[in-house]
Length: 108
Image (cartoon, rainbow, N blue to C red; front, side):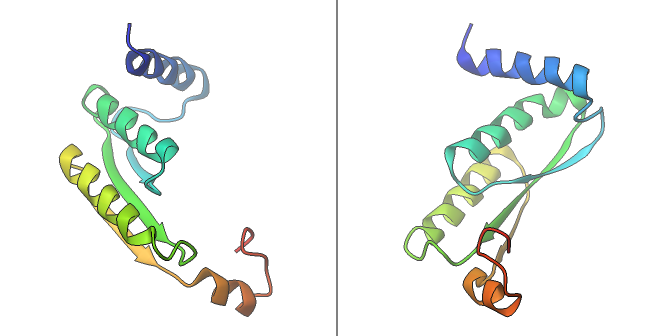
């Protein structure tokens, strides 16, 4: 059995135990473009039909990764399009917001 199928099984087991989602739910998946969030999107997309899930991807450019940010957004849009998942994206200046609200970058 493939690793992907094992992960699907684990998600379904965890979902039965913890009730993470139910049939027909709408799920907004935060997708940075990194491996963890991309894997989550792929796994939920694989479960979409079985559970009647409505998925959308949300991508936030926090303004910290200047060179990589555009590539991440392009990647998220590309994979979402391939999966038939709509994407919502936004760009913010996290450094400015953190100064404005006198909070750490992580907290902001």
